[in-house]
Length: 295
Image (cartoon, rainbow, N blue to C red; front, top):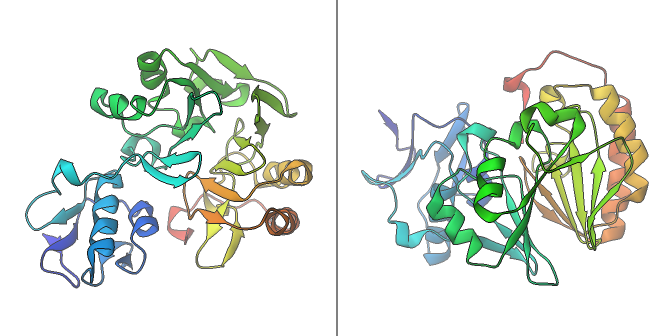
């Protein structure tokens, strides 16, 4: 059985896990209905048709269908350029809860992979066509599933924090402690324990913030938010992490694993990060509740 809410051709089938990736890429076309994504209106132009194709190729459960089949591979837009030096990988993996992953281009021409899409040799070849990939940066344990496969394929260094080392015990570089660590010129890792014990935020060029699952842009709030209901390790630790780290951060792009991406002036993000730290300090621990999360 399939859900054809508004369109006899484009629809979302019952495999949908409500991960939100499709709604990020096709807002207004795909929305949450009864606890999962659904196509809510027909595309009106080529740009909207392309947005649905992007959503289909990002979907970790391959739930977005065009008629009886998935879109043709020639329509795959990934890696999709988001900013001057950042690409969205697409092809989100069911083994990372459908998280987003990114490619970051460096001045020397090499790239860094931040978290991982689903693994396949064909996808790895597609990403490598952009340039040599020298580092795979894991934000935390939940997104580590394909880290070694990609690092091995590229001959890249695999990075993770010691707090989540059990998820990537063969990592090439282990981040330690709570202070910032320089990964490369212009790229810094900031440990941010809270969502998991070893959660890390990566900052690049004072422009790009890869926040993993530590914070995201909430479309329902129109502001920065933390995923309180799925903070596995400690909401109290996350509040302390944000209070310690927020004053060090300056960026224009927020690029999370889950939740919306957002671009704002650096001063505006600095203000909002301080306010997020203050709001998070007022939260108290509660049981994990997937149903309580609204992006």
